[in-house]
Image (cartoon, rainbow, N blue to C red):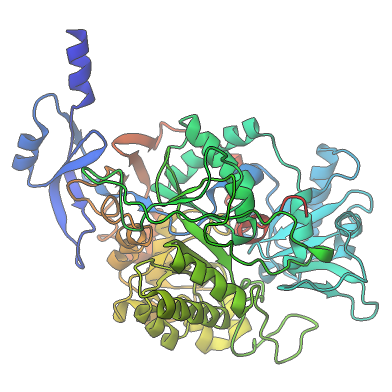
Length: 638
């Protein structure tokens, strides 16, 4: 009898009603009266009478009490595991996230931390979150500024964008960077114009030598922190997250968290192309890389996993990185032998390898986004025709995109500047000409300074642009100075893209900005800067479209539209309960709506007032800062 009761309980349904149920299905808002979940999937959406019949006996009934039920939010681009390294670190962020306003504040924070956390001699001490664009001095801290804190302890500051670092003299010495060190490919060492000595500021790949020097917590401590990080992300209504530039440490963490049953979110990982060999070597059970055809959903009811031809990815270990310069990394040969097996496109323990990540350029706030036209206000020491530079050359980008098309692997590429986006568009066009117009949904990550003619080509080529409208608030005023009014107004051109029928997504790039999905939606709808300036009124979108970009269309980006993104029968019961209906409030207040509960496959993973978040660690981690694009590029042994 007890076993029968247990079996009945295992299949008991949950019926949600009593509030607006926004399905997010279709081009216009559609509401339902009730929703029924059973065994982690949605089995019914519609009138209450039908829901009662579909739920059957023993149903658990949830009265929404006027609160709104939506699909769980999907992080279209972020760096979830990064927080395991930065969780609880000192916060150098500017307001409204932190309190740093001037270089003296940075010095005081670093000085206080070093005094209270003595480290072994010669160990690098790193701090994240400074933002020169929001400091009173409107410049980067320098080697001299950090030497004023310590001339014995190696210190490293990481820029809010993750694309620049600053080191003091002991830090530069530890990394082997001096006057004779040449600029690496895809990077730049800023120097004193009088002496030629590095001034401590290192751009893009020039900062790579520091990545292997950052002290790492052991795996057990990372897992402990990661448990808290996931709960914090779930508090924003997120049910699917991304590791948008995986290295071997991050993938090891994710795999172990999955093995131990600690992944409460689905996580989609995109190994960084430079460390792909290291990632492959983690699993020695079989040879080759299993590719699950894009669009198949083995977890969907009745669906079988379709498997494309096997492809191998060889190790890049031993490639030359002279003087910290990153040599060009060619794609692995198809079918090359390796004792590695990565399943691409298939969830295992809530972890999926989604494809490969490329990085084409830097950041607009760091003035390293690769542009077709010069910056209006170039960085100090640069000429008036400064356009920044590419991190990868055209051949590298084209070779990797071709590898993806040849082997049915999705490629996502960081492209902030329009010149970097041009490289990606050329590469996709070439690959399609050679291998056909496969439905691989290559993603243009950020595409912030995309021109309208490029958006037209994006649609033609089947690319999914993942915009970053949070920039309109956090750095919109800075972009007006850097690019001029016209280009700044076009940052993340969601309005034009929507008008052209382009399926796009929107993201926070957390930890660059906090993983606050409703704030993200607000920035897409309102587009006001910190100073209150309306940045690009023509690029504003409706609240409903803003929500589509983080639910339905984000699921499409991941080839998961059959299982996520809308509230429809047969899909996973990934849900979020909001305090208010986001379509019925003043758009300027979207960010004030509270997440009441987040549900993953029918199971609550966050409940407001029940689940506690480590406020101090979350505050430090939620900096407009951290290091997703640079810290993830750490290459072991180089």
